[in-house]
Length: 139
Image 1: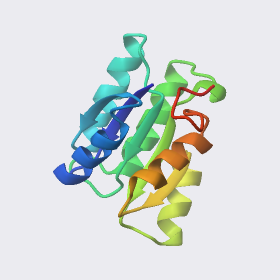
Image 2: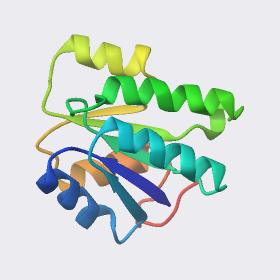
Image 3: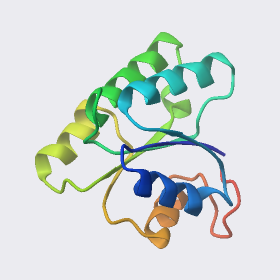
């Protein structure tokens, strides 16, 4: 599994990378601009990400706009809906407008409110079919 972790907070990036390292090859980005670049490059190289864990509040380009751009890149490359990258929004924001915008305007797959613990993120990844209950690659 290939994962892109996008967060401007060093601690949050490092923590997610530490949790996911046994299950996935992880890249990191510190803002939405870097995330878009990494996503486009991975797709062009034929090594697309299976999962993106993305914060919403970041400098340069925020998570909402980065996610919209990533979905646009998938449309440009004619990535079918069944092959689109799974996106878990990881944020401290916990209001219905942010949830609505992330899911319906941005195309997020899932939404987790920080602080995130290991059980929470692994359970969510299993729900998305990327890991089975033993921590092995899913569908």
